Length: 49
Figure 1 (cartoon, rainbow, N blue to C red):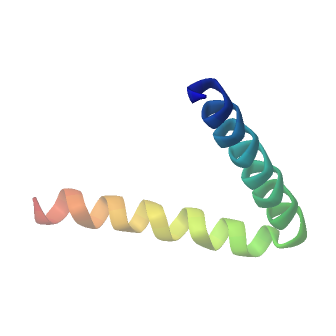
Figure 2 (figure 1 turned 60 degrees about the horizontal axis):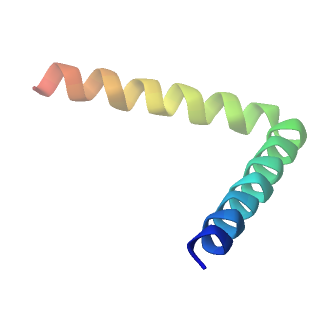
Figure 3 (figure 1 turned 180 degrees about the vertical axis):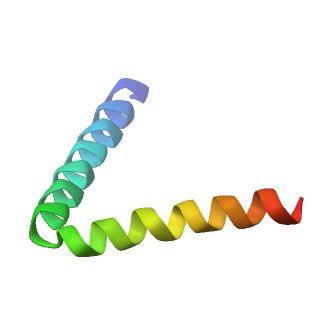
């Protein structure tokens, strides 16, 4: 039973990764903005800590 759940979860993750990969290919600018945004957040966290 647990194996089935794990297999299903892995399959869902694979589908999500594939969707993200396709979205990145469709929207490279959006991906770059997201990366820059996350880097800025990390830098801000370091500054305020």
